[in-house]
Length: 545
Image 1 (tube, one colour):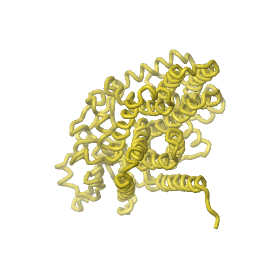
Image 2 (tube, one colour; image 1 turned 90 degrees about the horizontal axis):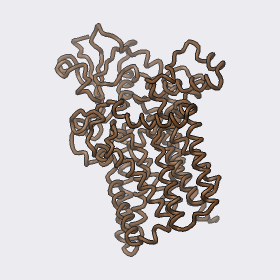
Image 3 (tube, rainbow, N blue to C red; image 1 turned 90 degrees about the vertical axis):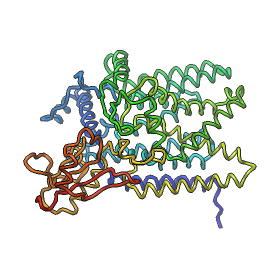
Image 4 (cartoon, rainbow, N blue to C red; image 1 turned 120 degrees about the vertical axis):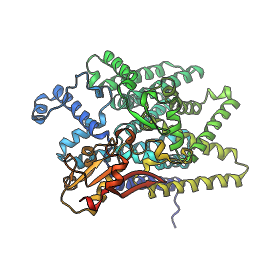
């Protein structure tokens, strides 16, 4: 009988887990609808493609865009040029190459790309955890924690900005620490490449990775007295290439890079004034610029699995304890700098949104990029507890059992509520969550309800209206063409056969009041998650046909 080495066994387990994650994701892609942001993001991608094409391949671009009308890239009202469009331009380019000509397949392609990017970032996250903890079991557990996070999982298929940004930032941080580990020019250029990709390809907030990591490297070299000429050169080259890649990946910076970069920063400061987005927060509708300082922090607390919250607090306590006990020694250890970088990636953006009163809306999705580092401190907690409870094996077994049970509970919740994991709240949110907070702000629940209507009702044309801010013209893009063609939504001369609502901001944007619904309609279908109604279909009463 052949005995397998420990390394071989561990590799089999690691590969098996990642294969399972990939299969689950690939099989889940078609279950999710098109989010409300995706259509605008698609258009932005083509505006940018058109701009790039006119500069590089003007003749071909003119032929491909004949009869099409795109907004002028240089128009001052086109503000998406300040954001990164690497995913939108890439998916747009693939759409052209693959000759995809219907909305359902266009957005399905995007969903596959979003998830595949997230999957690759999980691999990078495993590498990042391995670099820090030198333990494949803890690292794999970190990946499982991140993958099973309900809101992250659901958004990994449909979020055109926040999850892609989170994913690319993981790559930037991983290669940043690889550069920290071995300060050579090769590592510096790879780090710079991902810096440029995340800064200019998605969001300017990506600056946080190089700023914190370069500062940490320099501080470490000064304190440890290792600031040698060749290392200074490597850092300098990495900085230069970070700037070059940042310019390369953002066409807006191709002309007058410094001036336009300052314009991007200015736009960031005016973001709250430009995007006057309303939020439902504790039952009141509040504009994004007026949310309380604790808005994002509270959302993180109520939408993160509760045992993650406890583990993070233990991990944070363990970090402070180790720092206090070994204060002088810690500044000579790279692991301390790694942990401090992770901590800074959490608290600098979080505190920044509080102090600057940055516009916040749609829960805390704009801060999703800090979540992987919260998970790292959960893993830190497990490592800390395994050392702290080394002599109390029975208590350690109880802790491990609780972790296993919590993971299985989370798996069960995800399966039970698929594909509505975006509606996850823990018990800290209290009761009547659907009356207090925005839940389905993307409009993802409509796909299930529309499919249900089309399956039950066999009429060739069905008249449907929404009763929230969500627009039917966007919602039907979640459906195959033959299904979407059966839905009529642009009419005024009759009462609709069905009225659907996801309750998103319906206090302000409701078209049909409750009295009208009660008199003329009956509840046909409801989607309820943990007692919270996130979508309702009202059907016209038979007497009104």
